[in-house]
Figure 1 (cartoon, helix red, strand yellow):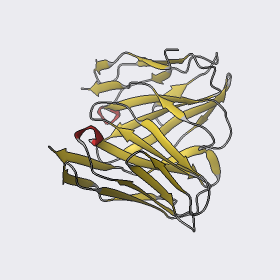
Figure 2 (cartoon, chains in turn yellow, brown):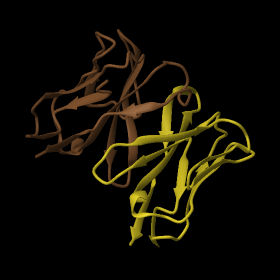
Figure 3 (cartoon, helix red, strand yellow):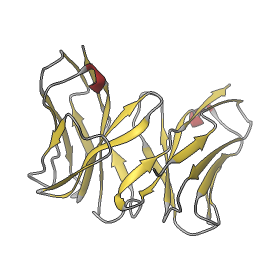
Length: 112
Length: 116
């Protein structure tokens, strides 16, 4: 069945280092969304990518959607302790695009 | 706007008990959904609704019922709780009922449920 995989599962960085998480889908996606969940919190929408090869930036965060629309990445430049949390990608399920299929997330820990 | 609200925040049940998790949104969103989140399993869709009176199953619907009598409310019912239903439950909503990813999805703060 359709799968969305994220790597790495966990990442520890020193504050100031860069961080990247990758999202790979087994099928072509019409769009992909990224969410952040702080420890003990709920997922919060970050961004949506729709176009092949799209790149969007939010301050220190850079999001990319692959040319084949099967993979995506989130890059954080110069991490801060406020970046701690789990980052999820999600895309519409094939056959019923009203459902989102989620990756398992990448948990980021930042050492001050 | 309060956004998406959920009650209760925490709940402990005994096996076999029933209960209803409440979810409400004040943004006039068409689409509402329920997820469960378990360690190592990510977010899994239980049920969703594209408008009042219309509900459909998600990926893990067994053991749960939903109804949507109003645009604002989307309660989740556990008919006979089992330890396997111990989880964190999130309600979410978005403005339109079209394809996922067409607009922002907003999550409630969650209900942490333990079934003994």
